[in-house]
Image (cartoon, rainbow, N blue to C red; front, side, top):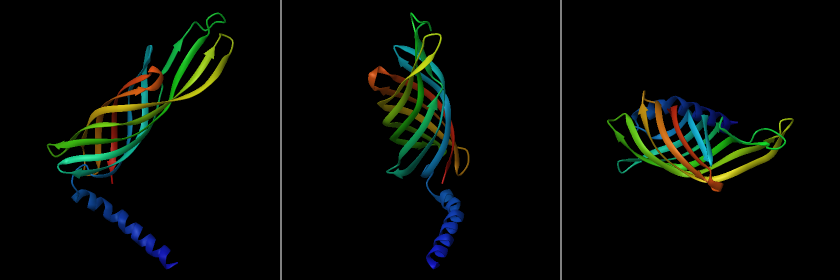
Length: 191
């Protein structure tokens, strides 16, 4: 029972002290979470663009004047590519973009005390749902997962001691000839 009480007291002390410690730490360091939304363009022969949205988390630290970090992201998209006339002679085949998972690293530098400029790279895995529609019925053909790599550049601006806004461009190259260009904006908190 004492260990539970001690853990509770220690945990509540850390919650109260964490914001104060974050304010005295170097800028753009520590754990972070963010929401993102933006433009998504998927290309495989034809291309389609729509809105993407998601959440991300990461951890950054300063090393030799650089900010180095790891990050992960889970996102979804409204992209849907279709081909065909939606008839018995020419069924309409569609590939709808689904969840997109990303894990990677980034490195950057602080400019002017409140802006972080960075580059990122890592692994991404996107899911696509395949359907066929012959005009009378729509059939789900299955889901496929595509592995790929992502590279990007971005900027974060500290709007407060623990909050920031960001803008980012990223390019993803998946297997089977799928590519993706995204321009996203986000709002996040550091802990």
